Amino acid sequence: MIRATAATNRPLDWLNFLLADVTGGVGPFLAIYLMTSHQWSAGRIGVVLTVSGVATVLARGPAGAFVDATVRKRSLIAAGTLVVGVAVTTTALVPLFWPVMIAQAAAGMADAVFPPAVAAISLGIFGRAVFSRRVGRNEAFNHLGNAVTAVIAGVLGYLIAPVAVLWVVTLLALASAVAVYTLDGKSIDHKLARGADEANVGDEPKRFTLLLENRPLLLFTAAITLFHFANAAMLPLLGEKLSQGHQESSSLFMAACIITAQVVMVPMALLVGHKADVWGRKPLFLAGFAALPVRGLLYLATQNPYLLVSIQLLDGIGAGIFGALFFLVVADLTGGTGHYNLALGATGACWGLGAALSNGIAGLVVDAAGYSAAFLFLAGCAIVALLTFWLGVPETREWRGRAPGATG
Image (tube, rainbow, N blue to C red; front, top):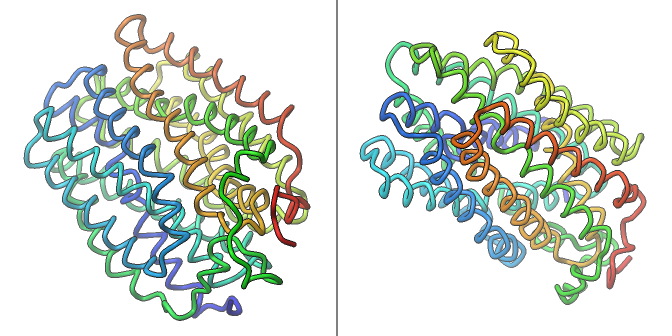
């Protein structure tokens, strides 16, 4: 563990900035590219996004366990970025159903590596004392990277073609593979990185089945799974809705949606990093959960593309809070077990399953009943997620060391 300085923070800042749009592959731009350039239906796009999400789900648990076990975390990230680069290139060159589905499945599996690996490196370098601030900073640079890339991708998609967005992601994947090696591998305490307590860092990890006995962790997992089921399809569906009648400017509208949200996410992530240890996790998280159903219902109130874009401010509040607090709450609930990254992977697999099912089911709802019905359905699921978290998950700020079997 080392002291946080500009020199120690900068490599992780760059990695998070560049990795922002590599994580998740092409994201919502993929739906626009396939719909406007190759006339794919919403249902067909939903199937591809679902397959990618399911691949991520299946890989998250093993990826988290591997991150706990390996001392080659930097190489793991680099390998994942190269897989995403090849997958996105394949999607651009061979935009047929089976090649695209296989490529997106591979990208989805690689995507499972990035969150636990970056979180583990952050914890292993900086320790628990400043982990909240480092996670907030990670998320802030991640959102800043998303915003900058969205501007570039939107302009290129408008001036050249929607496929230009895919080439931007490929270049970012290569840059991320280089950036990860600017981190000093010797500065990572790999025992601390897996969630061991600093006072007992030499202890062996406890049996991983103890995670299944951790009731707050299970309820938290249920709540965030419902949250992501409600959230994942909203932006792709909004992109599809905006592309109807605005095909030439659809990339610009999507870029505006992403930029609007990301600009809000940056200060929200920094707020979480600075205040989560002071205000507690739960009040902040409740605000993030509450923003989602309001956003889904507001999409029903207007057809104006500029108003629809402005509603993305709520996405910035919800996602900005969620992105930072997720890593902190899991660290709180698993402190001393030695299985932090396994827990990240397992909980991430659950909400990834929710996100994967969201795209497929919402696409089918659109085909059967239209976009308004789909947004109403997703908003209802978001309300259930809010209630599950509010009633079932305690404040975790002082939970450290109370996980079943934890040392501390």
